[in-house]
Every structure is written in structure tokens, then in C-alpha cells.
Length: 490
Image (cartoon, rainbow, N blue to C red; front, side, top):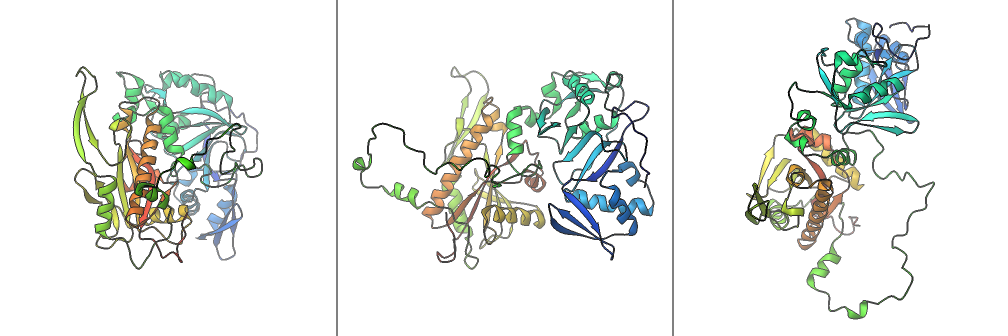
């Protein structure tokens, strides 16, 4: 292991003395080496076995509290290899962060916090002639008493520990060559620049470009507004490490709001005396409820699944229309379907994770709403199982759903027309489709449950689709409900 340097150094890096890139333990994690050579990790007090490692890894675990240089890990040798294996395993579990600084010193120039479990720092090659610019999706913000630089596209966020570095990065709002940036005060060093490029927080500008928005990404990314992509990435699992779900963050400071709003003061008109006999549709609405437990002995059938999809999502009509009332501009294709959609865009696609369905093999399928057909996607069973298990956990259910419907959006269908409101319109479409699912499930005596979370990174792995081109925006569990005495509804 490299010995810690005892002399104090300035935090700001110098061109002739670049900072080290080091891996260190997340502050929530502690390691304990046992006599049999195994290492135990504790995360917020919860233990996790990591397996057996050699004595070199045990010694390296001590250095992980302040940081082990990645350059040292990459070298050949038994000690390097054993510590590297330990760090790689910890990184896959999300227990490691990285820092630009000095080995043996606590002050960080920049700390790098992974937002996905597959993040590992990479340093693409740079040239002095490269022209660089900040991504339009990148932003600096205060988090607690720290300044963080992040982007919904990035697999890591950067905690800035040196104000001069922050000032230097801000200048990249206007493109400039790397050679010129190297001469500026507070230049953060080539390593940080390369890491930011790898995370799509910086990008290389082409010599001749029509504009930064068109130069940064493909056509799917061009259509996204900043706030829409940020909402998409931060309101789902998979691309951030923030607390997520029903954590009751304000339970100790704010009382819960009442379930029904207190009445406004003044005279009230009682509507009950005006009601007619309830209609069959009203009865169906009242019958709608969430079902979280399904009958393992009597799974939903393929015929029932076909009827459910036909009644809720199938394309019913096609037409074309120019965007201008006078017939000018491009002609756009439209469809009609059982549920409403903003601007008749119908950006939503259905993907079915089938765990248990009679006459349909277990697997991952896309529903072709136009052809009313299912196409199997060659996804491995491990991510399929992870998707079903995540739904089970999100519903607090005793088992996975028989069929899990992931509602994905082709974002460009809506954002091609609408500015500032595109993502909110897509979510309104999702709400309309979920209610349609509920009503059809009730009508068919099936069980269904809307799920408030989904993993956009897992979906990207299974479909090979960029999360900003077509990604999940909702989920719905479907199956035959367990008997009333066994199930739980709500």
C-alpha cells in the first residue's frame, strides 16, 4: 500500500502535481475482518457477509476509510489484486465512493458519489484541442452544507470541495478548448474533466455544429426539456442514490394531513337528494380496488390477458392530420385507443413481465397495440426475477404478481409538440390508463394493483433502449385474486 503523505498540501491541485483518484468506503459502511479470513460489512448497523479474502485485502480494508488510489489497484501483484477484488465487490453493492485528493489526507477536491451500482470511474482520452461545454442537463445545487454537480444523465454526482474548481467549471457554460482551460486559475485537472465527460456532464463540441442542443445527443435527447428529464430520472429507481419510497421523512416534524379536507365555511348544498338510481358504470367504479395477493393455483389465462389488453389498450382507429389548420406543415399519424391521451399522441407502450400465466411461457413481452399481439423480448431470467421481486416488495405482497405490466413512454411522441408540459401530460396519460386497467380488471373479476415505483435502469438493461428514448413511467400488477379469506385488498 502507498504510505500516507505526512506533509500538508494545498487543496487546490497544481498542473505539475495532479491529485490522486482514490476509492473509499461510503461513510455509512464499516468493515470487520474475521479470524477465518472473511470480511463483514455493516451498513447502518445491518451486517452483510462479503466472503473470504486474503491477508492483503484485510490490510487494504483499513486504508479504504481514507482512500486507496485506483492507479495502485490497477497494478499487478497479489496485494493489488486482492484489494482490487474487495473494492470491486464493495462497488457493486454501492458501498464505495471516489475522491480526487491526496492519499492520507481528509480534504477532498471533489468527492464522487455513484448513483448506479454499475458505476466505475473511467478516464477517456483528452487532447488540448478538444472543445468542451457543460451539458444543458447539468446543474449545481446546495445539498446540506455541500455543493453538488449532477445531471439526470450521469451515473455519479460530484461533490465539489474547492470553490475554485466550481468557478472553473462554471466557465464551461460557454464552449472552450481544454488547452485554454488548463491555464485558468483553479483548473480541476484532466482527471476530473475526463470523469465529467464519462458521466455526460461535460461533452465534446464538434468543430462545426448547428448549436449545442443538437450537438450534445441524439434526436431522442434533443426532444427532452431539462426539467422533464430530471423528473423522469429522479422520480424512479435506478439512476440515483437518494432515499426513495414510503420513508415518512417528516413524521417527527409535521402532523399528517386529514384524509378528507375540512369543509369550507358557509352554506352547503346536499347533493344526495338529487341522486338517481346508480348506473352499472357507477357500480363498476365502486367495485374497483387494489389486489396485492394472487391465486397461485389458478393463474390468469392467456385468453383473459388477451381480453384485458383488447379492452384497455388496443389501437381502434388510425388517421392523419397536418399540424396547421390550413393544411400546412408536416402530416402527423394518430391513433384512437380506449383511454384518453393528450393531443392524441398515445406515447405509452406496454411491456409484460410474465411470471405465471396459463398457456404463456414465463418471460418478458412487448404488447403490439396495433397488431394486438405479444412479442417476446430475449431478456435473461435474472432481471425478470428482479423486476417481479421489486413489484412484490413495492406492494408489500406475500408473492410476486402473475403478470407485471410496465407502462413505458416513447417520450418524443409528446415532446415533439409540447414544450414545458410534455412529461406532465405523459403522467396524466398514465393515470387515465391505470384507471382503465382497474375498471377492466373489476369487470373481468381479475385482481390489479397500481405500483408507485419502477426501475428505469433495469428496464434499460432488459430492452437495450436508452432511458430517455423509451422508459418506464408506471406499473400495474395483474392476476387472478386469491380467495377473499386469503387476500388483502385496499
